[in-house]
Length: 232
Image 1 (cartoon, rainbow, N blue to C red):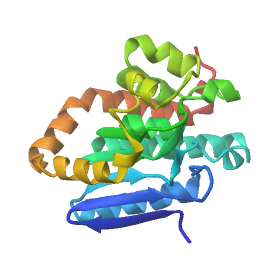
Image 2: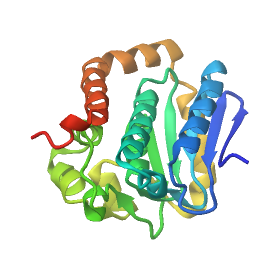
Image 3: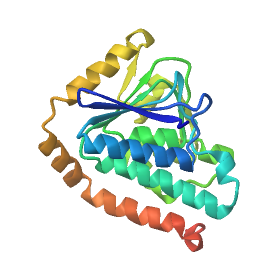
Image 4: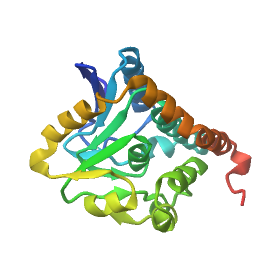
């Protein structure tokens, strides 16, 4: 049974990740997420990406990454390519994070056109350097583009972890939603983005990120080149 499900109602595709645990992002999950996005794109649907109650995602599947250096590079690349896909997706992509949003989960929040998180005792941030992982080039460039300059070092280099309200100031989320308003807010944001002209949205989204995509594509390529991993 897949840990990723998709439900399309009235032009809004809700994609839910739920493995019953930390929503670890492994190869199977990336394949299932891409299949769900294929379905949403074929239906010309707005996309809402959700996690399970209390958890959006704890990041990459560390067990799979630990199988070998090449496995880690390939898995990281799959995550980078999915985030890049979100950023070039023709319809709006919204993250509705119901809890902890760590590492690659936080990068997905940055990649979305609009991201909101349920208020609560949750942790948000890029913890790579805290757990002994050198930040990949794609992650650095995503942080450089999306995060306020005053937060770049704190998030990307120092690995600072935030609560929901502080994570909004850091640039990960656009809105913190009270728990009692959560479900209604998800429906409302889907309806609001339904008012955006599809052609104008798609063309503006791609035009405004044209130069960034060149930087991100090079970063993805460099991250797969083991000879450049320790380049300064």
